[in-house]
Length: 304
Ligand SMILES: NCc1[nH]cc(CCC(=O)O)c1CC(=O)O
Image: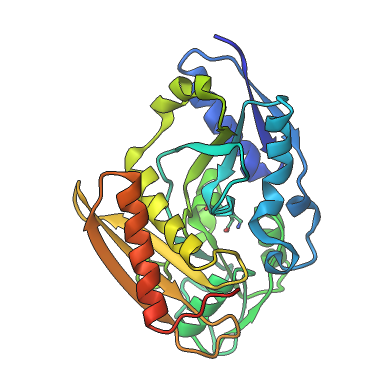
């Protein structure tokens, strides 16, 4: 078998994810090496991502490596992958999803409810900001950027009473013990794709599909496809506070919940859900589109 190269960002989380895929492939007899690179998203640390160009910032350099055949695969947090990949690139598979929930990390307080009135909570995600505001309108929500270690350091330096992060990233880095509380999806609905890893390839690399097939979770592929269809239909970018989370009710029926909030936080938070029997990508996307339609009928505005 020809050796495979995985292009990866060099944050601790990205490297963990790339090594995870490397391990899965090596266990099946492949020889796999990593090609580390810094992306623009990693370089811009002082501004909120929603203001500087969003998700694409983390994937462009990796795609260039695939384009130039310096690498065969790129491993991404699915949450950071744009809804529409550039011409010539495809999502080859989605791996079994880690915990999709958001988590509260705080040195002093065991839960959101335990935070004192007006406490400073750090997050830079508009989705988390709007959902937090719905749960605890009195809190003071402040921007928080940087990779996981940077965010935890800022918390430990005392800049925030608590921060909210994806549970999946903390668990992957062995930082699970820092989680004080997890938010159930009905309380704080996760972002589309949260907790899932996706593997991107050049569309013309059909030769890789056999190697990747054993890593794929069809159930999570369909669930995240429905979630991503909501984002796409709503003009998906991180400048819109949008949540979409799909759960299997049984082996055939998928339920999707979606929430939309006004970026300025003025309008009430809108929440909708829809269910359907899903066994194909098309059915998963149709379910997501139905949820997006329900959000618009309830008053959500789509930019552009
Ligand atoms: N937006 C950054 C990002 N992209 C992926 C994860 C880790 C969790 C995941 O795989 O969804 C995180 C950190 C976070 O949101 O706290």
